[in-house]
Image 1 (cartoon, rainbow, N blue to C red):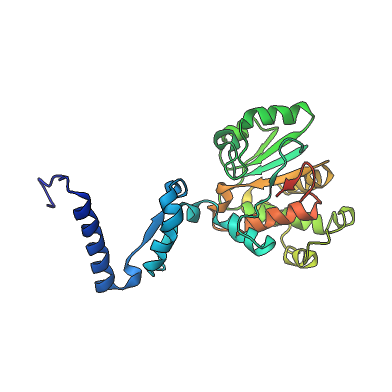
Image 2 (cartoon, rainbow, N blue to C red; image 1 turned 60 degrees about the vertical axis):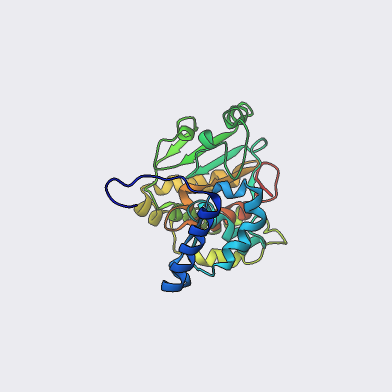
Length: 268
């Protein structure tokens, strides 16, 4: 029953499945395919039955309202990987054990061990990075566990990371253009990137993000000068209003600075 005094009642599996099937069918019949919404969470990736049969079942519902943990997590990473590299799971990750300059944007690997990067014992990896003379720089509006142990932590207004990352690209393609390594043979469209960020100056980034223009310039210079540097970003920027732009800019920074597919940079 419903309302005051309602109580849970145990029913058998057959009755339970019939109840779910009948209610689902009734909602779709009365209100159309899109009246039904489907949500998939992490447990689906850890269930053999869901992995083998779940997708086919959910496709049979014909609803366009399909949501998942991905929607509020790494979808911008996957979309950018699909558009830039040809597959949604071609996700470059930092060569953490050999990098010398590690820029962490909207990520907290001290707490997550890197999620998509998946680095067991991240705290020890940071100690080893320091021991070989490397640096970790964090951009984050919060003083996270990672920010607390960083060599530098710069606060950025929430949702404005895109301006900072695009301004770093602006610096690489204007002020530092003569110092850039040759664009890899597999990369198309570097001149398009330069055109797209032509007006996105460090001064504009400062006005939007609060990060001083001089710091934006220095970050771009440090990335380019590093012997194996890498920019890494995660859910903090993916869940923002410009998540896809941010992840695209991160890949472009790693490519144009010569750090994609390089020891100490971003590797597949």
